[in-house]
Length: 80
Image (cartoon, rainbow, N blue to C red; front, top):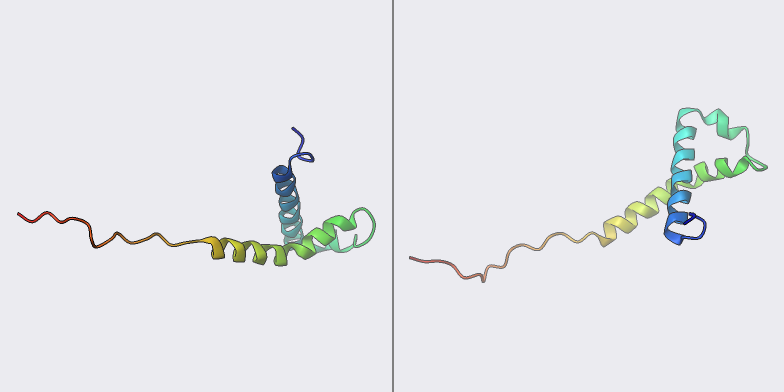
């Protein structure tokens, strides 16, 4: 099935595009900065929104992380 018709795959493709544009902009910013408008401006916009997307993702992951519970102390002990 195409990534366009599967929502999870579409989100994965969009996130991959954002990450790729941010990486290219970190290596060679002039490539994306000279195309701020038009069809190629989409890549510049993806690179610009990358830091807020990364921080939102990190906040979401950290808020849903629950530490492992310690073992209960009421477990039966073997006394001989």
